[in-house]
Image 1 (cartoon, rainbow over the protein chains, first blue to last red):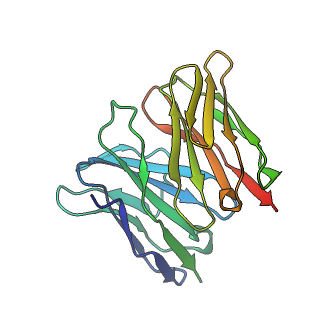
Image 2 (cartoon, chains in turn yellow, blue):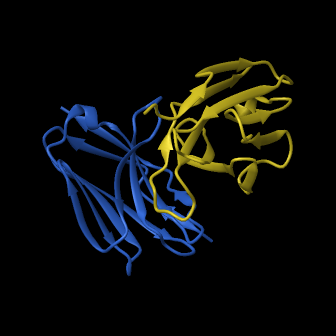
Length: 115
Length: 109
């Protein structure tokens, strides 16, 4: 059973460009979470999605950031017009369902560097 | 508000024992998780506590006291590879994980 997959593992963008991060959850998992981690800091929750639904986006900046989890295909975290402060590691995690104390399993992360 | 507190950094000696504490205040409680994160890598699951008491898993043990809003992770027979950050996370009433900032554990020979 493949784990959570993220790509790309590393992404370099210039200021003003768009960054698109992909996450494929573990097989059988229908819940996806995105986190951001700045160097030497803890994980910060961004958004929680189920297939075709955003459940909680309270941790996501109101502008430039968006997320989706379509019926088919991976979850996408999209950052428009990137700025240097967006440089961070972005982790995706998945779990089987909401009403469960199931562990969240993490992908390897995408390290975004904005020049 | 919701809050998870854990020390920023700890140092211990190879072969020794170390206890990493975590205190929490959250809206509801559906369990407490400990994760290990090596530098540059993803967090990996270590333990889950939902009832009071001690859960032992090899060299690692995790303790929970719900009435005190307190947990600790105990690492025995420390090895150099245990150098990592240890993240405490609490699942709240909405089944969302609230994360602490992590404790960086440095192991010295």
